[in-house]
Amino acid sequence: MPTRPNVLFVMTDQQRFDTIAALGNPHVATPSLDRLAARGTVFDNAYSTSPVCVPARYTLRSGCEATMTDVYDNTVPGGGHAAIRERCGPYLAEAMGLRGYRTWGVGKFHTTPWDAPVGYDVQRHSEEFYDTPEQRAGDAYAAWIAAEHPAYDWIEALMGERTDMYYMPQLSPLPAECTVESWATREAIALMDADDGRPWFGLVSYIGPHPPFAPPLPYNRMYDPDRMPDPVCGDRDVDHLDQHIPWMNHLVYAEDVDPHRARALKARYYGEISYIDGCVGDLLDAVERRPDADDTVICFFSDHGDLLGDHHGWQKESFFEASARVPFLISWPGRVAAGERRSELVCLTDLFGLATSAAGRPELRQGGDLLGLLTCAARPRETLFGFHGRPGTRRFKAMVRQGDLKLIWMANGGHRLLFDVAADPHELEPLQDRERADELTALLAGRLLADGVVDAFEGGELRTFPYEEWPLTRIHQFDRSRGVTGFGGS
Image (cartoon, rainbow, N blue to C red; front, side, top):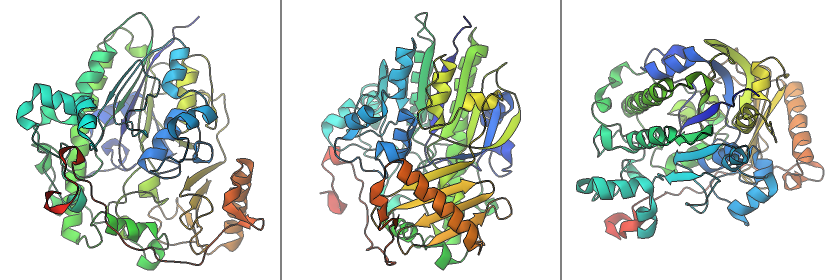
């Protein structure tokens, strides 16, 4: 029987698809990701099918789409974490353990509750903020800061300030060697090397470059804002047909970002990415020092992107490319072609099947056969769907990608945007092709019916609502573990 490979998943948070130098971005330095791309295969059309933190992670760990996990936004509905496992089957780490793998995970898991187990033999959390003193004490990274670097334990926001500072250029309050990314990298390398004779499955889930954009020295000044490209925007009325965009802008105090601030934010965002790239380089070095380096599958991806000012928007939860499309790199020397770029439609849901196939017992669930695709043993998917917002409500929206066409369908107003992403990669000119939009809408309805999502329908048709602008609000994310719940310190 052939040796089963180790499997290493490396995940960033909120990293756009177009942030790797070797893949065409001349404004950012990513030597380690360039190296990984040269070592393996890049999928240029990879998507997060529910582009926001919690549903993307449940998609990854369950191998199922939101239509089965029932997680369509950052809230987990009744029954919660255990009910998702009951519907979908054992989570990925548990599934790999059942296949004889030693499993470990380090970083951001974003479960509900925050410390829910997802099947790893060793699971070390580093979440973004802390609701209670017990959570801060139980967070592996925050506990490490308190124990090993108590001089920094006074810092409320270890990854940078949020709330009104969410989209303000910042400097990490910590030196590079003490940041959460550096800590996670060292923890992962130690766990990687803790051999017990079994192959291992590991996940490194970095918090960056999720805002706030607060890279440590010297990465905070690595890029000149005046050399950063401006955001790319279409007609504001078209961009904001998705009401989530202006609503989210206001939520995170980003409704009036001026051009200079946008360029400064991009400079700090790229600084974060270059810093994380160095951490990825340390992981690659650790793998390549091992005698089983060629028997290690490495997959690098992100949970979603960031509009970063494109389409007059900030944050994610949009099906524009900047938000929904992600970097997706796979390396397995001798089994996966080196230096190749592929155009097939793939997504985070496929990663469950990639890991279990590499382990010798494929289980695809709702994903595609990535390993079969890479070895020409499986056909590519023709159509890719994405879902966000509770079906049957005004906030429900969906994506249908087929060939070069992409439909964004919105329950709010029943609006539809159709783009040819090959001819119009920035999605600035919606196509006026009602026949093709109808065809893709019918495919969407068929998929929802096949998945039993009856709440999305009314009278046999996809349910829509009169267009409505959403009431604006703010989000406050202070350190509740220190008793800070709002401005003024209480």
